[in-house]
Length: 357
Image (tube, rainbow, N blue to C red; front, side, top):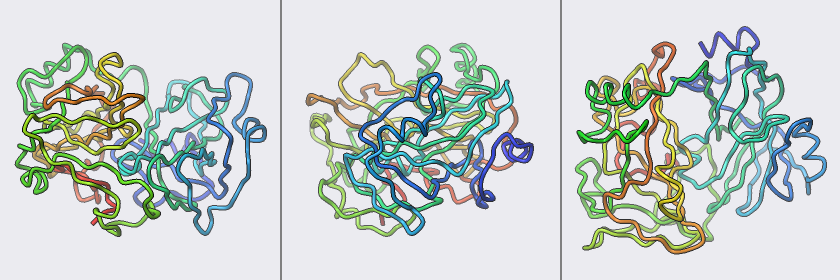
């Protein structure tokens, strides 16, 4: 359906799609040839284009054709190769790809005249832009690099609480009987290291904290970097707790093993913004087939990208930190996540991004 929409002109691109660009329930978005460093993040708002705001706020521009390093603490805007001419009944949503989130690269998509990030109204005709701000590691990107993914929606796809309980009873969405809270499935933090699904967890490692002042990570290289050069392992404590230091970045894992059945997708959203001064999961989309037994998974842990805000905050083992909202697909994808399409995180435990050996 994504490919058909592109053929009909609803998704436009200055160059043909890459062979693996269409994913089971999303389309990877590619960076264009030029990047702009700007003074600050922004939203264009009604009556204003992103290009107009770039002209007002840009500090300098540079080419991505041969690759360029994006520095931490800076804000960049990059026009995307893909643009949209959506029908009135199809809206879009975007989010960072999993590997982007696990590098702590804060990425959002902006459209002309919008009041919000990562949400594009039905009927939108116009360009798309990526806002990129590396938080921990400097990254090298090129024209064509993929940091974000686009999803397309018709109507309200989210399951109600009742429908979600019925689906959980039939499919066991997580390996816990009582998991549905309201219209989402609760996800908790594992600080005990008891999961049998990962060697690091069996050694007592329950997470990783990012190091500062590291080398550059080239986003298109796989298994290219030593873990110890970029991460410090976190070993389970006797009291099964972890104090998050302000402005530090952590990779942790859920207690639950998650399944997404073939006719559904899921999105991680905050459990409650009032429960604590921390942010969980920058890249919160789970494709159809994620962790699903028929697609090569036996339940996959949700890897959680965690950052504390202004104050230290203590997490306890089993503390609920997020919830999964499930959405109904209009049709089952031709291929599922993990089914021979090079999916990096099927049947995962505690796992860093694909860039690390």
